[in-house]
Amino acid sequence: MPPTIREVAERAGVSVSTVSRVLNEYPFVSEETRRRVLETMQELEYRPDVAARSMRTGTSRAVGLVFSDISNPLFSAMAKGADSVLHAKGYSLVLANSQSDPEREAELLSALRQRRVDGLVIAVADERAPSLAERLSGFPACVLVDRNVSGSRADSVCSEHAQGMAEALEHLARLGHRRVALIAGSQGQLGSRARVVAFRRHAAPQKGWALVIDEDGSTATGTSSAPASSAARPAISPRASSSAWSTRRPRSSPGTTSSRSAS
Image (tube, rainbow, N blue to C red; front, side, top):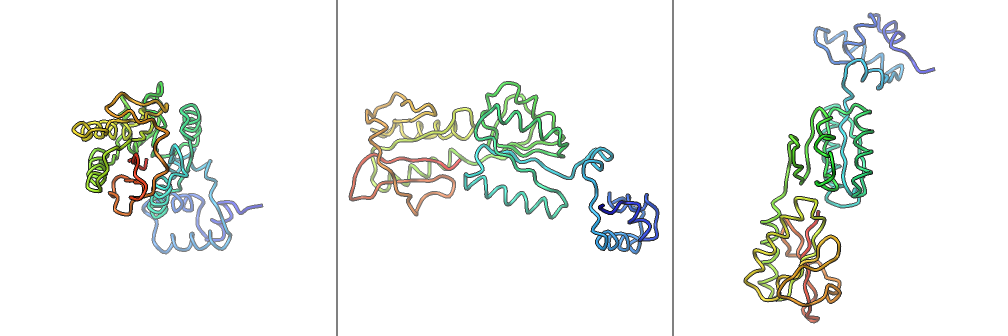
């Protein structure tokens, strides 16, 4: 049987309520008493009942993190950073992967609400998903990662997609490329829309710089008639912009160049 809070109190020579105050970091507990209780908990290998504590205090000391694809190196780096910060503050991270599926994402959000997480960080799969703003409002605090959900009062942290796209295209132009294609992500995401707008704006003066591949694989109308299949597998340029990936084919094999961002 695991030790109970009563056993901790008896061993430390204090009341159960004092142990509870130490566990919940309440004031008005002397440093000596706090130290003795914590040492006793360590000796007995006492672990608080997280579920019971959450019911009693209304907090879980946990934050949910939902990404559309945790295999994406960008998202995995964010998760690692979030975990480091939260751990230092005494919080645990609950990581979930929506697999870019709005229905799966809705199920995950429901589970996290039941888990009573104290906050949510999320890169939603599709900003256009029905009732998304309402679901996000069910959390005490919410931060959107590179997303903009209409009707939501959540804070958001976004990348400079337009600037990144401009830098990527300028880089390709300096290399002498004249036939450039953008492979855009879901148009249900802020970043993808911003990149498409920036691409079209910078590509307008250039002949052959208007082939855009949308999320469904169709090609937008433009000045280039080159099919999507004409683009060979690109090699990543070491001089690419830090805010967007710029890719190109080797000089010895001229052809269509693809510019793709990392989100």
